[in-house]
Image (cartoon, rainbow, N blue to C red):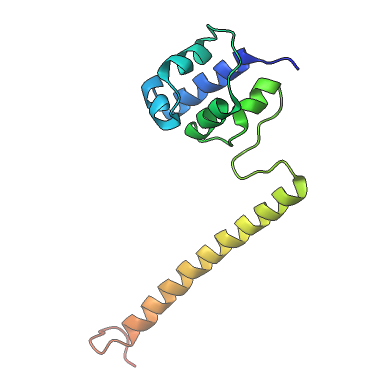
Length: 129
């Protein structure tokens, strides 16, 4: 398997720019030393990195835990919440859509309850009952 550390460096640099992060901030978020981040970013030291280092950096960059490992291996990275199993990912997407709809319905019900409470208030000066 060929490893593409240059692609990893590009991905990290682009994401840090998107998020407005500096090396020091990424080091704090990921608990990976700033020196290691610098080496990876600038591809200055040809050395294997642990899967945990790539996972910590991926999470600190708000990606799927396996994002940088996939980039390194030349695979398409998963998005947060994806498992890589199509059936499971479809189910998770449907569940997310259901949650969004329930949130929307809850907000509408809360607004209706507030309207009913306002109408039943004896000090209400709206339309006559």
